[in-house]
Length: 482
Ligand code: HEM
Image (cartoon, rainbow, N blue to C red; front, side, top):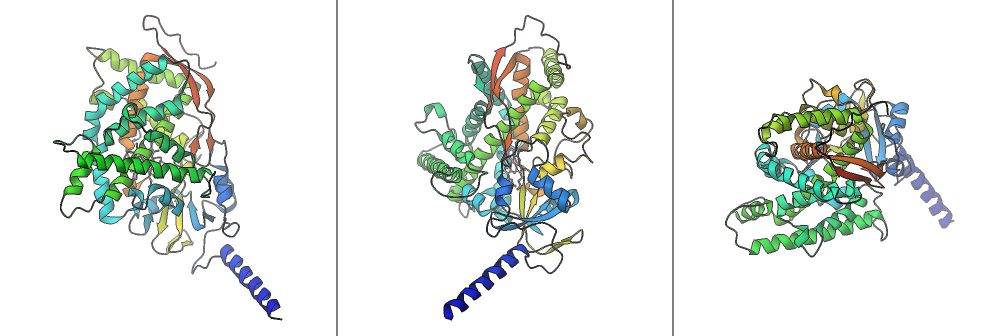
């Protein structure tokens, strides 16, 4: 009799639990949507790879069925997905008040509990200032010659090679430059390769979070462990060395750590270093690879870009003098091109927040503690805002302010947490493109296909042959119809 009763009770408990999973309690009206299977939610569907350049199928299907705001469950968390420009705007404006930056536990495990994206209030502002100091306009002005030299030398080297995988090679170039700025790391002089650990890390970053040997997620955690060990060792060595003046970010951090009553700890500094190294090279290399691919496919866009950069060289007294800040700022078409690239590349597929209290919006309730995901691709590919949204047209940005975010452009986020690396990315992209289109030609050889999981990836790289332009010969005119 007892086993029968126990069995019945168990079935009732499980049924109740499944019912609660599917119908979470809420005092108001939850947005429509499905919470998927118990425990799994809709995680597998969300991470399922697709090759679309359009709004991710996971989102598009649900937008059609439920409208612009819907609920789901991802990695064990109830989430409200927003593709609604007004709700997105509200979420960004209410940072720290009604919403707070939040990423799934798996992300915090990967990036560290004390990474800048998970910190709030005073500590967050302190770190943000640290980073802005490093990547703000004054630092970038000083960095310009170094960025140009790196781009030119790297391109020269690539032009001597048979084939170059641009995804891999631009990542290496940007990593080396950023690591030099941050920690004076020189891959050619180090016995251990710091970037290799980041590569292992990235492969599992946006993957299903199963920490079992053999899975991409497990490799990702191992990559982080090794990279953090290396960074820690480097910081320790540097702390033991006596230095007179500040040269890189490590020196700055070491000085801060010495200050009495400082809020900075070694652990926070290391997490920050890790995030910056990761954020700078992976995102920008994806954007640059995407940009070069687009240029290969759109000869007219390439021609217009070339004209802008050749005009800069023609205006100079000495064509071999380096790019000035004024010249950089004059690259109007290039900035439009970069905006159009990041609009369509949709490198960041989702921006996460947590509701700090219950919110009512457009008749729906978002319960306290729930996650919200702003979906930039749905905004950037909205046909009501962007005419022919899938076509690549830099001129659509003519006359539009390109700094900062709007309700319809959030490739670099929005509100208080707007990406601190935006200007750094733009400098690197614009200068690289300047060197590329004025001195070189290239021919796609293989790869270049994209997969989204849902983060953008080039699974087969993008292999090209790079050739120096023969400056004495007139370049053939491009024919758009070919
Ligand atoms: C194409 C290049 C890039 C894209 C598309 C991009 C995108 C973004 C987005 C969407 C956010 C907002 C995240 C949120 O609100 O939760 C963000 C934040 C951030 N980005 Fe970038 N980013 C790029 C380049 C960089 C670079 C080069 C750096 C390094 C200097 C960087 C460092 C950061 C940091 C530290 C944050 C967190 C800021 C905060 O929490 O206030 N990013 N980025």
